Image 1 (cartoon, rainbow, N blue to C red):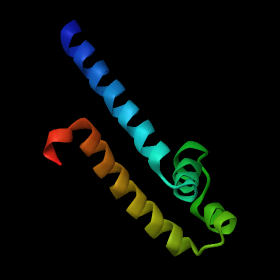
Image 2: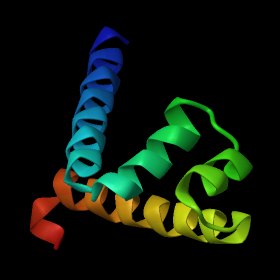
Image 3: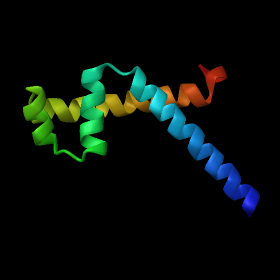
Image 4: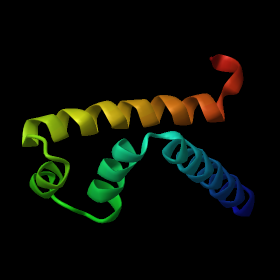
Length: 82
């Protein structure tokens, strides 16, 4: 059981590192939207006001950014599959 726990912890560390790298590679405006929503727990409405965009535009941007982050993380974790 300890070995399985160690493997899961190692996998989580790798995913976290990949996420950090992918976030760092994002344009600043995109990163601010992701960090504002997920880390600062700001509402979509607040983000829309801050970034001068509509609520719908922020929702669509979040959807696009999440998909991009997922792709980036998969590429970092599985570089031979690209």
